Image (cartoon, protein in one colour):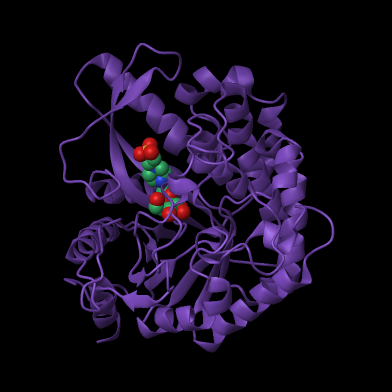
Length: 440
Ligand code: GBH
């Protein structure tokens, strides 16, 4: 690494992130069925129809995995909780085994001196709730608030931070407009309702935790810089629309009590009645905001129904996901978020990382490309910090190679290699480099 801990402010936190469905193994411990199990079972949705029933078997190996987090010198561990493990039907009687698991996991973090940074929802909705409309149904805000209370009653006192929902854009747009994630819907009305209900559920969850006396609550949004692919006014307008429904919808809803015009022009006719009255809840006070950042998109006008745009292949070097590597976008987002939306509120980069081939050869994985990617994005964080942005931490996605959603186990994001036959863990070169930077 070009960086070392002492190049950052004293209170700057380094962490790594995972999510429940991607690592735990949902076949264990009485977890209920989720929309990802259903989605993966439908042919054509997921590479080789793989699902998270076994994943990394973190459910049984969490102690050794947390040893890896501690040994690398990380301060913080960002993890998520499976709603269906805690409440297999999504509502009603909790699963004692599930609650016990997160209780043990929490204590295991604290024993290792790690700050637990919890996310309550990272995409695996219990299937029975999908049968009742899922994110299309306004009642999801109350179901989510009830689930929040059940799990926080058990572990809330020991969390360092809590965020209700990972990446609301993915929950709403990617899953209900593009249909590229569970539940795989392609419908503008469902999209608009999900875009609103995901924020309402966030707000009800925050209100619930405030009532319980919990603190250090935040939101985690994913950001993708939209660059117009050409100089035409049509493409510039298309990039503005993309930015509006991808990035600004959520920041503006959370921090300004409004939705951006360029997104309302397509979504307003489909929003649930009375949506304007929900901003008091949606805007419940937060203690921090997290940005997940990976790439940018080149956007051009397209003669199709709203949003009338298409993504264009870009010229920059790409990761194995085909995503352009564009660190400048992280600086730009940190600065824009602070200036326009969050002011003095602490910001965290809650996810950043890349997929690379990562072949295990003679017991090692040489992933120099990942080291360069992290270095270049840490440079961007430092540049933003130098302009006065209160960015307070950086989390690498991800600790382990894991279930990469529609791409199954094919794409590897980990600092630690996982052999999906033996489940053996092998720290990659990037893990050792980060460890050196953080502990030397
Ligand atoms: C993160 O999402 C997720 O939080 C995490 O679970 C996941 O493992 C990680 O990314 C790596 O993928 O139009 O098909 O090019 C990041 C948000 C949303 C970023 C989809 C890339 C491109 C979709 N991602 N987006 S596509």
